[in-house]
Image 1: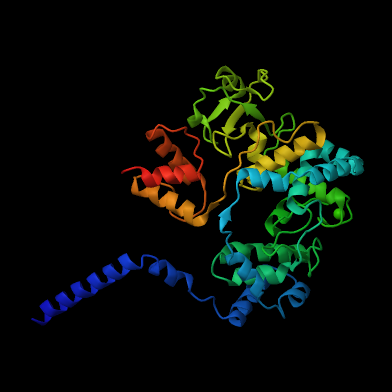
Image 2 (image 1 turned 90 degrees about the vertical axis):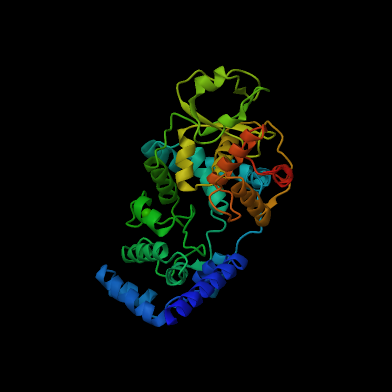
Length: 411
Ligand code: CA
């Protein structure tokens, strides 16, 4: 009898838990989220022991970790998520401005000698070193004002991405030990430093003391700054015999499903499919791999991107960022409009709208990679599949129209 009661109770409890989870599906995740970070001073003591084991010098430890306190503002910024995802049009308008182009051209002239020797050694076109500089810190105008070590200590102590930032913190301490960065160096809230915003491990792996004064100084030394960026790009597979890609014109009957970084074809083959330069002339008949991108959907500008585009994505995996680098770099040496195709004016989508698209796709059996409100490659691929099955242009582009279609279409 006792056993039966017990069993019935168990069933009741399981049922109640099940109902609770159905009503509050995020409760399990939420309980994980509120998990407290460990007691700071105990955590810091253990960190110091590990730092000693990693042969960080006593002097560096005294200067950096002895009185360090977590920075509340860093956690606030880490938790802050933009409500709207920026459209490609807005991104380009903000990042490739006339002023930035003008300044970039001046700097290309001003630093010609050092750029000549850096690009001679690392084999990376000069305009790209300037373009990255412009996008990362507006040519060194804002390299960040957060103290690097306390910011990294805060993020390493916090639970969200502790192991990533612990690794970055030890790399930063080592850089201080080696005399490359000052113990009170400043940078972004997440620990990016200098003119090109290198994270400590990137600094460790790619920073170059090109002026040979004993330290790679990515704030004050232009030779070190440019050489480090060029070294990073070269190691990321840069090929100076090619550009990053180009804007192109598509034929009216183009099959949009061929867009995306997974669809790689020879430039020559794109030409055979009717893809042309924006002035209507034929693409060069060269044997290089290219992918077609439609960052504003099928109504907006189209791009063919080459292998160097993938190197830019190693630096920063945002497609908008990589296109902005390429477009800005071109502006520095070519007299032409930023884009030949007019930018598409479309409303920015909110996180909840993206979530609704993802939820709708999931219900229909597609895999958008979770319902997180973030536009990743899986969400774009799921949109493409839905568009294919509902006879719409397969550009993988999330839009208000797409959301309406999903709302109105039956399962
Ligand atoms: Ca130096």
